[in-house]
Length: 266
Ligand SMILES: O=C(O)CCC(=O)C(=O)O
Ligand SMILES: [Fe+2]
Image: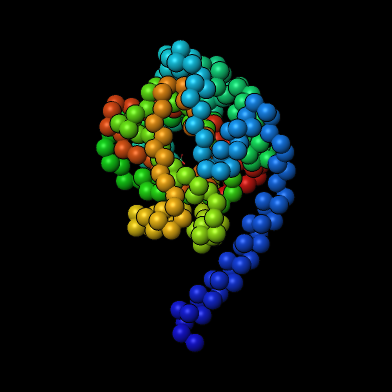
């Protein structure tokens, strides 16, 4: 038989096996009825893979967070080559307590991921590099095949000029995802921080623009450009396709609360 075709048949067999692994993982997640205060957010997350919550914190709370944030020297450059600066372990910093101690976030994460939802990384991110940046996250990508929920708190008004995250609504589910999910399953490797092992694997999960257009057309999916006022919380399942956008204004300041199912970094 043609070598390529026999290789593809083998891949198909691996996809069938992987699909079983995937189904077993989701069947074993203990997802209970959510706390009623967050139930509408969970339904929207389940439907679209994203929910935006304006006024999660007040504008005054956001201003106070920005005034009391740590000095620039305490931020470290992103290891994923996208030129962002991170203040790690932000949940321990008193300036950020209003956000990281808010019980609504854990309720959302548990209601969506399951009882084993735990924070992977809690940080403040500052982005100041303007214009186009050569980084994987400027392409539509999925982070993982397992639930990986990110809550971005906008600390100032984020317009289309302030690098809003863009999400392809409804792309967190669907059988078409299987080949890329399998790639993330087999190729994505993490370091002990729970993020990409190196700058090679960081690109695993990216789709080319023409592929995204095909997916959009075939499955009737639409982009959501997540602009929002200061205090808006953008919660998205990073299984779905999403991308970062160009910064045109001076900076983007956000707090990130990032949850996974315990022990399931990849
Ligand atoms: O920072 C952004 O706008 C999105 C970056 C991204 O891809 C992610 O956080 O998973
Ligand atoms: Fe991402």
